[in-house]
View 1 (cartoon, rainbow, N blue to C red):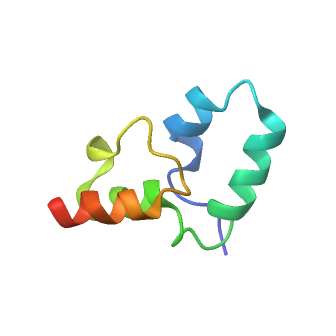
View 2: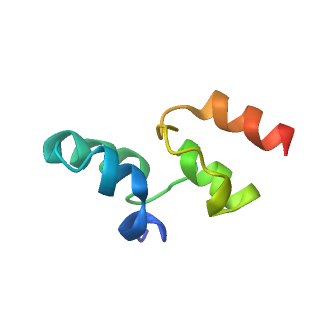
Length: 72
């Protein structure tokens, strides 16, 4: 499977994780490479659009993403 279409421009990695490349690579491997269905940021992107992704939303915060999607 290919990398997530959002990976290159993802503010989470380019802004918040820029100074932590080792941790960033671990998170990318889990949420961005291959299946991205478990990434909270991608859940919001897919349903509500890029502009509705909170800057402080971590890929692991799926419950928060589900609440955002449910609220529309």
